[in-house]
Length: 292
Length: 222
Image 1 (cartoon, rainbow over the protein chains, first blue to last red):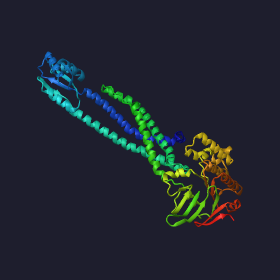
Image 2: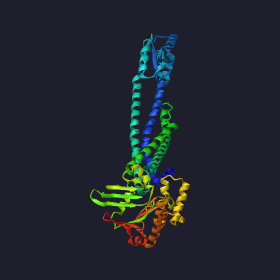
Image 3: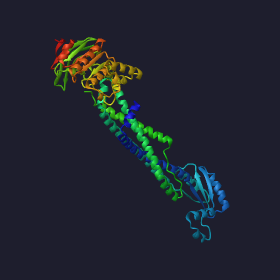
Image 4: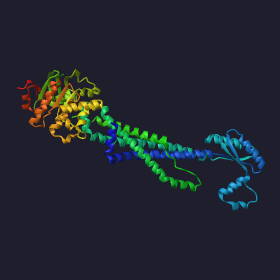
């Protein structure tokens, strides 16, 4: 029965492919957004690592005193790591990143204070805020810098993105149901005579329904496979410009791929959607077919 | 086998297709149902097949009160009766073998067993050599015989036929009727609706005569 329903689809390759393509396109949008979110989450993870506080000491703190102070900061609760940046290192870093060697060489004394880059245990905004206040209270600390507003915004953006992906997934899942439902409705209509005959000679509803459910599942599976292929092809197509763009910012960034687990989930999901769409359509239209 | 008790059938609340029909058919009987077109032959057969329910009275078939039969039981009930249709209702996208096997496929009969029974039924109607042909390649008479093979492949206790010879010439019609008599001889109850009065008269079986939805005659053809 299952191979029979597959054969039926193969016998009409164009219309089958069109249906599967419609399903694939409906699946690609939420899957693509999910991937984009996933890449944002990757960024987020990297940002978490770079979510640090910078503790600037008073300008008159010397190099050896700065080392003692850095050790003191490192022992504070909530601090995972502390890296000392001496005044001289700070100046060198500054020159390197900004390319202002000439201008700085005009200065008689190093205007930068020594600083400590602190990696916190917890990176959520509230914990970082309290850690910042705690470090600020230490002696000979001039200023503690952290960019909370930016972290906040990023998290809100991620939450928004997640909701949008969910809404799109629901919307396009409904789209898949309708596409499959309509296709199955036409299939039921075109096999009306067969349905009437088998009903006359004692077929149960389940028997009549089964091949259509298989067809729906095949459509869903085919659409899922097509959407995976399109996602991979599209990813490859975008990969080199994305890499070039990242390169120009001096970053390494590769587009994420779905991976085996998520691909399997997508296929399962699309197959189930196809099955469900067929089930809804057949249930509705079989009731209309009564043997004459 | 069949009992109609004060059966009436109205369509749309006005048109009275059948009125106060009473008769009994014993197991192993063969009989004809006759009358002009619109007299109610098809309505009566549809009631026996449980395609419709009577507006009044009771229809009992093989011990089932059809009005009390739950909708989910109807398919299983229909498997006990073989039906031959005037337009034979074959499926044109599959071969003769698959058409005859259809009732067995529906019941999930094991393929080897099904194949044996299909060949036996095809042999009975003389079409064993055509099992791989498509219905379209057969003559009308052959198609009707395929329809009969499909109706009997299940060895039903009751065989219904609705105008089985409607599109056939007299010689073929006689052949078809002889087939029904053969099945009757091995114990199958056979009910044939037909308006071919000349043919019926020659066969000397019990005849139910309908006129305007009423049973006006019950007995051997005169």
